[in-house]
Image (cartoon, rainbow, N blue to C red):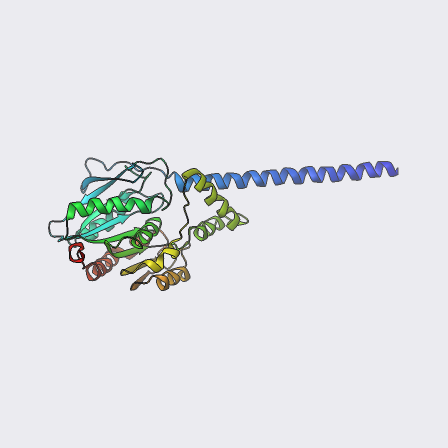
Length: 310
């Protein structure tokens, strides 16, 4: 009788251990799936379609060559009365240069040249994998070279980046004194923190650890770090006038993070909070009034010509 009881007890424990092992295996597989999916989302975005031939505002195709030979694509909207005033527009994750159309139209209407750029691995730009700034920051230098050659010594250059594009623009502005003004729309300050917030929204346990694994896997895929240096680490070297745009309902970038960024940037900073706007709704919620405010900021701040500095 005792022997039967022991056998039954051992069998019960063995079953529990087997079930626990099975559940642990399922959890591990689920985590690996999340990590793999998240990493590929970051480095291999969905490509956009080329601007259609009948687009009423197609602009002029322009190109630049990255330091690793990747051919980068964009659209140039040259204004006859720009007098060197030029804006580069940088889109966010899973977006395309067409998504920046309203921004381009609005600033062009104020008499500016506007270049709308496809990040590497997006739209018509080459490159198999994106790197969330790992290579895109350096990609801006040949773009600025190309624009400076086109515009000449009267160039007065500003950048407007959205989310991922804001991080790229901020980091580039820290090291290139040809950039005279900066507009940061929905800017995150630390990709690891933002990824953690995004993962937490899906109720995935240990979100911070999962975010670490996602970024580590993305680095192995792309060959460069996606989140170092962090935008907040580059901010003290940004000495130019900067405008920060944030929606009050942005669930990815908190007001505290925006405040920290504004305090860390060395140059003068202005902020606009757009009531009721989520992370991807800043311009849609702000509308023409927001475009006008951005235009006013650019005209006040991007006033120094490259030729005046030489």
